[in-house]
Length: 363
Image (cartoon, rainbow, N blue to C red):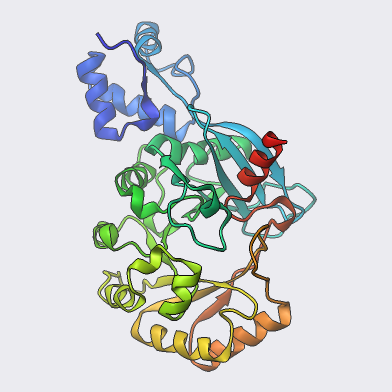
């Protein structure tokens, strides 16, 4: 007999229903009650599930558990950005960030509406030259419960207790890892997010970012579970090979051709993420190359000023350089929007906090 407890956070709704009925011999409706306690009410144990009998709660305690990541470190920026370093059950560390939609009313104010950036892998195999996570290497995929556990930990931290009036309003899968290389768990997490008895997230409030993975992109697009963002960062193949050597195995021309065929709903556009690195990818020839790409796609361009990472040769653009680049793109009729860099005083760029933590442990 298998005596290992089942972590219910890793079960989709159909899997939880099967476990409740077949393993625990509960009535089918009990699965819905347990699901609401786990996801909508963010329960950390079974004793809180007061609409279940004591006997049922005892059986759950014996056979199952609710296990979320634990907070290893938390840092709050002067601009309201909050970054968590979370420890998983096997001791691995991942990062998630809360980004305020509005300016904080006072220092450390975390009551404003938030966007959360979540991780999907422990480390990353893509080895992008500008990214701290890429230098950590790839350890493993995260489970569905670990991906969404980031949300539940953050919800508890900001006292986000009413899914119908959420504090964390939007989610972006843009943290550590490449989501399309963990497609099955990412898709399960999106379906769980949108379940009406749980957090009831609209697909319009979730964006999944990829650096450009051929396998899985079409399947993800056909699912309609979230918006797509593509980490472009380079408007030509040679520069893409320099910045994103592994992603560049899928040639930029082929990536753009695939995006031309990507299924979009009415008024939906693909987001192209473009990390602006001073002197490297922000020159007039790059504007022309971006114009040719954007002319082929129904897309908008998010300009992200580079957040300096220790050990890389790249520099952040000055405000004047960034404005010059943005205006040059506008002149080419490109919908380009600067995404303000936040959390620079708390090492909020992807992978920086984990890298700093590991460096401290080695000292």
